Length: 128
Image 1 (cartoon, one colour):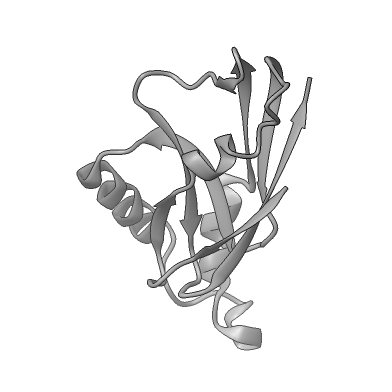
Image 2: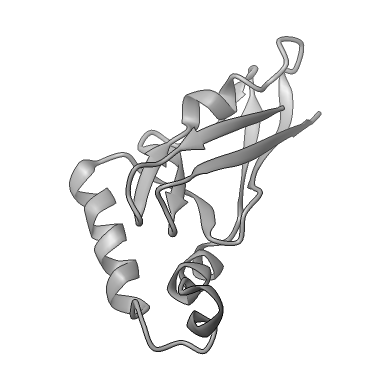
């Protein structure tokens, strides 16, 4: 199953937990769910859904990777976005137990937009 995520800022996070969980077939009690961002300038992470922490993540990525000064910028000006997404990775894998994502108490799945605003596609695969 695929779904789209529309972002409204260059660097932001979007909680996609409910949309990923909705992709689990009703007859799947146990297995593994993998969500994959089909882009080189977006990532998926498992993290706490707390607004200050989400802001901290965005600030951390901005501070870790400068916005300018990269060779790829000569092509299309978004090397920082590629580098930030590379640090985080394009996928998140979560076990399924009792037909639901077996996330920890404070865990959620986020798309991290590094080159927005854009519409992104996330693919979800479930194996049982």
